[in-house]
Length: 506
Image (cartoon, rainbow, N blue to C red; front, side, top):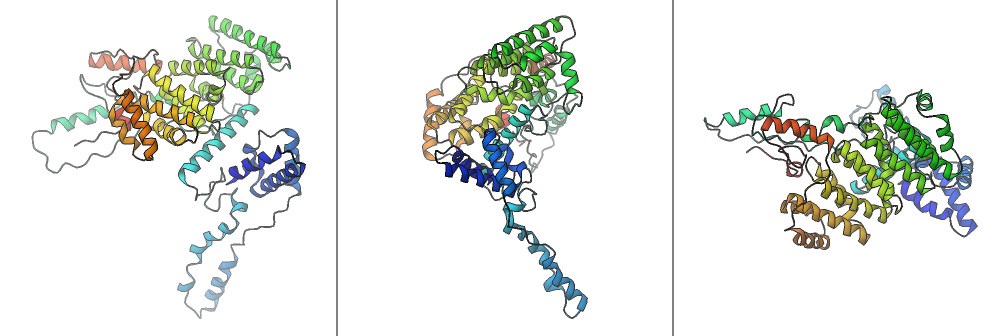
């Protein structure tokens, strides 16, 4: 469990006793030599340069004495016995089943190679409980994404896959089918064909086509400039040199002025029909001034620029640009000075695509938050968006599982309070059936959730105040086919209950 050891040793680097600091650096250096630097680097990236050099110095001096046993030794007796031919081989035919157990004796040495049943990329043991493994993987992924963004490297391979709609279970066989009803099942295959237009009055089932998933063309993350060797040249040709130089300035006022000049430049380019691609702009912002900009006013300008690009119809703000900036925007939801601009940028992205798409981007960054305050603010933000956007087209199951795992199970009272409030909003949205999802909670939490359900049980959901461009076009097509329009701008005929509790043909 590399992350747990690193977190404990990192606290020793800041101890007041010089001996403790030196011992912590030596332990981290030895651990780096043991599991390789690639495994441990994402967890020590926040350590300052001087302490990092000390860790690397100890890593070079460290000598790992534990070695994995040679795999050829247990096979030698079997080969000799076969050569003599005096004994039958069946008793010796099972060493192959014992061979995988040998590397487990030196698990720390081979963890980085993935030969002992552990994850080769994360270095986590396969014997960890699932809920602990999820938290560690999310934390490691968030650390790797932050490091890649700071260095300007592509993060396509680090992003979590978008949430998939719940698979529809296979309908149970009907014991005795009368001769009359065959006409009703015959209409079901026609509704499942994505290319076929829905019949008047027919209700689309979840997962039946692209409209039921909130727009698959918007769900996929498509990077236009991923792994582009000429990325620097394209940025230099799209953004004036004076602005790029201003981003590198040590004076925050010059960086803020460069941010204002960039917005003016993008506005002029968009008005002239030769707009700069927003993904290039977001990639430049991740480099300089960078997502870890020390001055909050410069960061405010950067988030406001992202919001403006997402709202600007003349710019091709794509899903790749949204995925590049979403983890940083989630981190700043807990910053009192930046939570407003960060929230506005995420809302603008949800309006351009769908709330479902944005939730798919933010679930893993929220799950990986270590600060209880930031986690509580993130849950409050999710609660607000459900009220302002509504739940139509939203995949609720991954959200509910995440809130139960990191919210209701949290040891922080504020985080639990925000999670209970979110569940209350969910109760208002889909009704008392949501109680069926709370069966695995302990009695104390269950009592809190039930009290919240009783308090909000009679309160209806408010009308959505935001529109979602990714849903409005499909809704318009569905309304044209069915002869009715939906005032909420959501998918016609889609029920969020279908995602939580998939329907079955009886």
